[in-house]
Length: 215
Image (cartoon, rainbow, N blue to C red; front, side):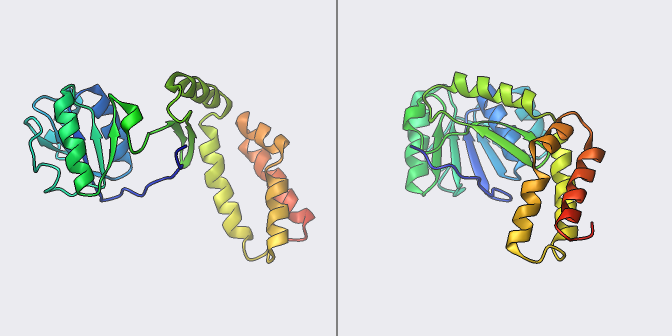
């Protein structure tokens, strides 16, 4: 059983071995996280090539060779090449320098897995079956995407604002817990899902008033 964790990758080196569609998909998410990406591949997708041209990623336009990972000291390595021997050599070198490896072709050998996920602003949803059924992970992710539309990202930002306003006025842990229980009632979440953030905010502020703190 794997341990779930969210990594801070801003400014950290990550290597992608292979330049196909899998590497492209990984690169998009890693760029969003602020990682410093190096792609090692003799050929790359148009998107990856464009990112390299824009200097958003580094592209070593060659097959993997010994030393390419060691000189970059990445924290993560994604082995996505079609060449199994290149993947194996990259994995061995990555482990030697202490990097964690994601193996796209043989997920049972991987150090970590990237779960099915989607974002609603700063709200991140992830689904994992521990590698048993990626198809089920995708299906559940799609159900969750329907259940939690993009407006939930806006709601999270608004809750953050209200929380900062109320932090000093709700001066005990018990009061703050009561506030959150009231603020996250099913009726409030239903209002959010319907896109009625104004009424949802009123419900939250009324909950604050009922606890003796002026909103």
